[in-house]
Image (cartoon, rainbow, N blue to C red; front, side, top):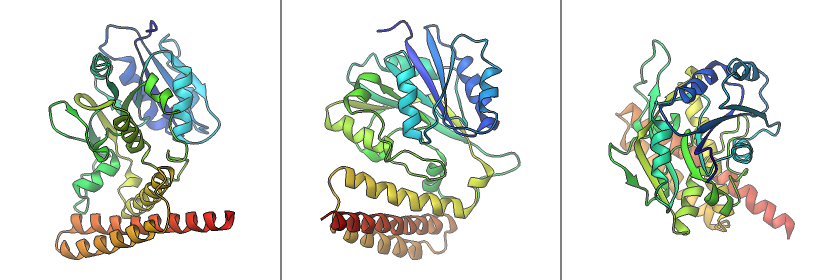
Length: 309
């Protein structure tokens, strides 16, 4: 194992307002072993580089510029630059607790562990509380993640750790060929599901995935995300991401149209069931809207396959 015991990686794109706090939370870690911090500037045009340079006197900190926009691309670049066998990813708008790296590092004493992540709480903008129309399910789209106060080994991919508080063993990442750029977020396109796919790969190959409640991270909620339109857009891209994930897994075809249509009708039906509950009603409408995105991607996939023939 290299001298650097764990590498903390922040992939960032035009988030200079939050980035400094994210870096500072890593520089202030209560961790006796050697660690490094890699900031991957993913084509930012704001003060990102300046924010990092203000802290460049600390030898733990590394900066790399990645011009190709895309979260998965940036994550793969971070892994290449990092020098340790354990890679810990923190979002650029999140703040890690002071034992975050320590908790993650010691979890990997388990040689079967491929992926681990921790609890995520939300930091609301000043003067703003959680909207009445925001359900616990939709709060997860803002990053909230809480499976309780005990360590859990994940058996269902849908419960996988959130990407904003995420670690992975290098050997496993190399085994599966890195993060898939077809699924990670690209600019304002809210593609997702890369962590879900990673967990599927891990479980299929006999690895373990863990939820570690003490690896706590707090995630800033940007005010622009507290609009219903943001959640509808997020639901649309979630549907597209799910379609792409199925296609990558060899599950593409006419059956996707049936699955998407059934889920769309189910979403509308549940929205009517919860008509008197504004949070759950909106939750189900977002789900239904996401199925339109899913169906749109499925139809494009079928047309593309037909044209190739």
